[in-house]
Each structure stands twice: as C-alpha cells, then as structure tokens.
Image (tube, rainbow, N blue to C red):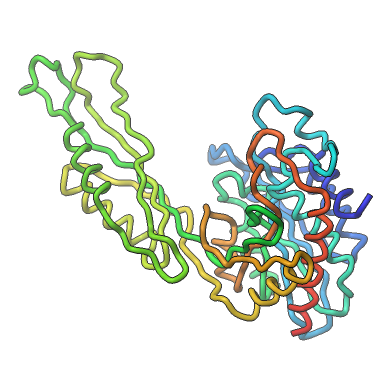
Length: 378
C-alpha cells in the first residue's frame, strides 16, 4: 500500500464532520511529526457566543529550512460535510473497490492532504521551509479556521512566500484544471416592514409584498458586468422569499428575501452591498449583507508555470487556468501570499459514495513533490 493511500484511509476513518476537532488532527500530527515538522494545534472559538460552529481546531506545522530559504505552504481542511444517507458502505470506513477508494472526504479533501504529506517525505529538509495550514472549519461558516491560522502565522512571523491549496480542481481527469483565482461572495438579507391586516380591509393595512417585489424586480434586472479577461460575469441570484404568513386572509406584517451575489474583481463586497442597500431603501426596505469573501487573482506567471510543468510531466495534460466555481479558503490566504488551488477530480465531492481514483493519490503526491522542489529552488 502506498503512503498516500495509507494516509488517506487513516484520515477518512477519523470522523470529522464540520467543525472538526480531535482524532483527525491527532492523525495528521502523527503523520507530520516523524517528517521533522513542528506541529502547533489550537482551538479557535469557544462557542460561548452561541455560534453552533465553534469550537474549531486548527493546525499549523512547519519544517524550517536553511536561514533565508524560501517558505512554501500546503493548505487545506480536514472537516467534511455530513455524509447523508444511502451510502453503499460506511462513509467513515474507507473501502477499496477496484481502483477507487470510497469514503467521505476522499476527494474533498482528505485525499489531497494525504498526497501532500506523502509528497513532503520526498522533499529534502535542506531544500527550504515547508508548512501545512490545516483547518477544521472550511465547509462551515469559516469564522474560526484559516483566518485564525493567518493570525497565528503572522504573530509568529512565519508567513509563506507561496501557497498551494489542495481543493479538488480537476474536472474530467487529474490535472486538467487549476484555479488561479475565485470570485467573491456576498449574501444579502432583504426585509420590508408593513402593517398586518385583514385582506378585506386593505386600507387599514400596509402590504409589504409589492414593495419587496419591486426591490427584487430591480435587482433581477441588474447587469453587473460583462466579465473580464480572467473572470466570468458576476451574477445575482434570488435564493429565498418568505412572508412567514400561514393564513390566506391576512396581509402580512413583514416580507423577506435573500439574494446571493458571486462577483468578479470589478466589484467589492462593500460596493455591491451599498448598491443593493440603496435599491432596497428606495422601495421602503432594508438590506443586511454578509460578505463571505472578496475576489482574488494570482495572475499567470512563474508559480502557475511551475504547477503546469509538474502536471504535464506526470500526466501529459496541460491544466487550464480557471477562476470558475465557488469559494475556498484561498480567499483568505491570498492576503498573505500568492495562492493557487490544485487537486483531485471533483466529480463526487459532497455526493453519496464519494470516491477517489487510487492511482490519482500517488500521481498527485508526485506532482506536489515536484512543485515543492521547484518553488524552493527557484
């Protein structure tokens, strides 16, 4: 059994539905310590404020190279989404069937982390500094995860020069896509207050629904942009509509909606929140935004060329540089250093019977080894 496969099985077997703490981090520490890493684990968020996602465990591990050498980081998350029902086998009992390894997190993203650990075993300690930035809070609200790790690194003066996030970016085969950026994300709750009353006496009430409809109609008609060289057009989607009204003959006192905007680097979360807030106010409503992340771009250059060369040498495939898809913790790490995402095929992530091709684990480990060596010796 290969090192990457053995590590993947160990991590999958450690149940870690978000927010993750405990055994899965014990397993990670046990893998890294023999490789010469100093492992720092800490809990962020106590849950005392009532937030259900706390507490969260985080891990920062570092193997220092010679004084003045480059610092390259691998980043990822050990938490997983709930498995759901009707799996063919126990989602937390890794099972090989043919050339596939089944289990929750096999692809997203315990498999990639296993390949990272296997990769660094083949990188000489004197090549440079390598670190692992690993959180237990990526699949949840991400309040106490990578952001807390960034604070930890900055306080210790251990920020990396470059970072590779192991999210499952490949689409049809290992190596066909890497992410050089991501769109930003903002969710905005809309609310219009009215006056409750009987539908037969509308003059004694104030129906908030027409006002909310006017807000949503104007928002739905917005064309935010036409896209950029590296980003697709920003899009605004209406995701929820509710009056909390259970009677057919009552004009409700309140109407609510929620929108989600995925936006490119022509905008910021603040600018879009201000735009939506002004439209809501014009029609008598209010808006409450929560910005999940800003867009980022690591322009094609030396780092992406190193990754592409390693992928091509291993697979014969030239990875497409893309900014499509959702958000990841790269949205936080980009404030520290240039960051690119590259990992396994994403076809089964978050699905029932999530599985990774076993040969891909070893191939990915070799790619990661090549990338780390190239970055540290440039």
